[in-house]
Each structure stands twice: as C-alpha cells, then as structure tokens.
Length: 156
Image 1 (cartoon, one colour):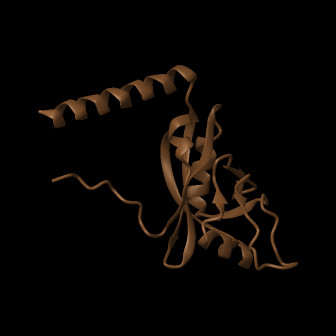
Image 2 (tube, rainbow, N blue to C red):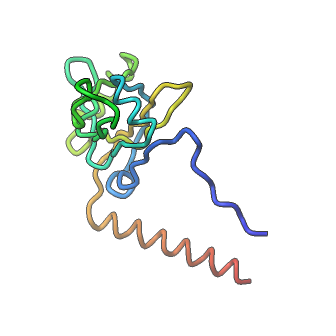
C-alpha cells in the first residue's frame, strides 16, 4: 500500500518555501496580524505572497513588512495598499526576545506561514540566519542523498 503524502491543513493559506532554503531557522513564534476588512477578505481567498517579506521590531512593536496582499476585487475606495506595513500581535516578552535575537549581525525575522486559527489570521515567523551559497548546496545534496536512499529501500 502506498504511503499518503502529508497534506497541508485546510486552514493554511500561504507558505514561504524559500525561507527554509535561504535561512537556518533558529526559533519560531506565532503572531496575530492586524488587518483591515478588505485585507482579511483577500487573505481568506489566498491572495497573499510571503516571498520577500520580513519582520522588524521598532519602538517595542513588531511589524511585518514587504508582504504583498492583493487588493480585494469587490473593494472600492476602501481598498488597502498591497505592501503596507502590518502590525504583529505578540506578547511583550516575545517581542523583547525577538529584538534581542536580532541584535546580532546576520539574524533576521522571516514569515514562514500564514493560516487561519479560530477565524483569525496568524503568521508563523521564524528568527533565522541567512545561509551562504555553499550551505544551500550542501543542504540540496543531503536531500538528494536521502531521496536516493529512500528509493533504494523501496525497490528492495
């Protein structure tokens, strides 16, 4: 009997697949997103891109920047700016911890996933350091070797 591939949960809206390739994620946090009415409607339709997004801590508050949420089709003059900065809802201790982690050079905050939880939009952010080119190649080699080993075991 063939193995079933793990399916994405029904409430997962967007995933940043490049984040795992470009960063070594050290720690993850779940944060709420402050969105306007037309933004949440677009997010529920899946019209969000996390590709170039990042988060920043300023004056004791965390903001998600450069995340594109497409304008809502039925929205009129109340439509939002697609690339505006959005506030992240975190506890003060979490913000302080993230701020302390990002003081080091080369450490950044990247969005990993956006999903709905009890009707509210949540974002999973990861604090990570950027991988160098040789680290990326090494990771790809390791994945390829694991795939080949799995294929060889299946053929037996």
